[in-house]
Image (cartoon, rainbow, N blue to C red):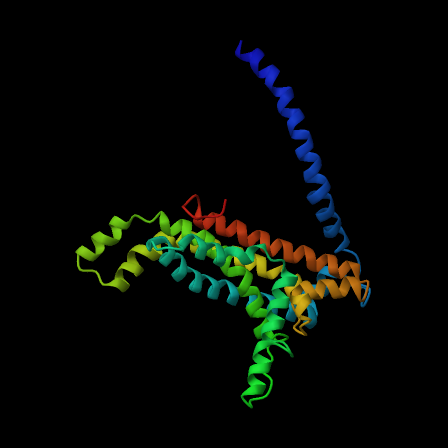
Length: 279
């Protein structure tokens, strides 16, 4: 009976897997495989393999370094800000708490282009700070098209993601552990250092990894700001659109994807199945 049951179930399982495999191949495996192969072809500018051009030419290396530095700073600052907010929201109960949490996480719904437009309205040539600085006789304060503007844009859409993750993780911390530490004479900082941070470390590491990977590939915000910074998504766009250098754009895309992929894999290995870890 058991053998017959497995025989009946197996064909159904296979038929269910077929659409999944078709979608996997059509939307990920084949396109990514094509990019990998395309990156092995010669670069149009110097006839060297595109991967070698990407890792040897200063222009592309600068693009990688700039993108990594910005993404790492965004991840660190976003986690520092969001951890405090998340712990407060998890521990305090007050009227309007759900509304406040909704407002804090609402920017997740905004695409990158809208976030970039917000930064322009804040620090652009006709933005709030430009008009305020001019009114105070300080001249126009413009930062939207610089490293500061790009950093604020990335930070704007990163903080809500981190808050959502850390609020859930903070709510799972056993408050009795904190009370026990205080009853034993531990200071507030000691409770944070020895109880709260270790309990939140998987969620913090996971949030930093997600922020880092998201910022590396963020295109809409950087494109809207029209910044002159040499960041990876704009470099890929420029090579593909302006120079029709498909091999280099493919090589850059593959390397960027692999970096994000390995970042998330390493994070998953470090956090395991702890609360707040990557799924």
